[in-house]
Image 1 (cartoon, rainbow, N blue to C red):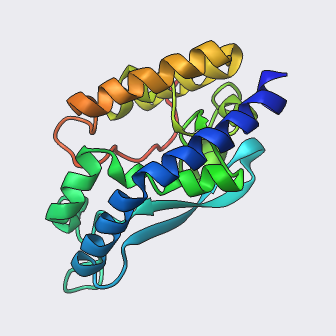
Image 2 (cartoon, rainbow, N blue to C red):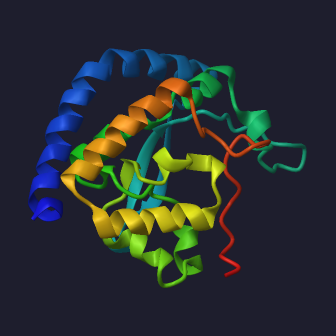
Length: 202
């Protein structure tokens, strides 16, 4: 009842109100990133949604497209712009995903939509994270985010699938606000972004 009927309605109402409230901020950040990223303020990428069905996620583009002499993209740390670093640390880069919520691609709360290339790498239990819509924030994000292992992150995702409720979603949203304010768990130690998932060893 909650997942199929109540949650989609709440997602739309809350995300619409949220989008209206943050629209002035979105406008300013869009202009700044437009200037910093050679006219490309947004990042679009195909991600797996409910049951692995692909959709295009919308985020602010925090890294430029600089390449080395051989034409390969430079490291994340080298491509992360100054404004991009601020946008990422404050989690402002996630705000355009409110459009994805309004479109019904994702929910406000759910397992984070990762890369399409990860789909064949999940074991049977980890793949259960796709039994619900992905979200802007989730149980794994408020319990470590990028500072925990992939295995622990997927365990928390499946735990959310098994215990999804209005109360849990409210708890996650409240914990997300607190996490953002203290900038906790933004990235794994020593790296700008989380290392890629290459499959579990156990």
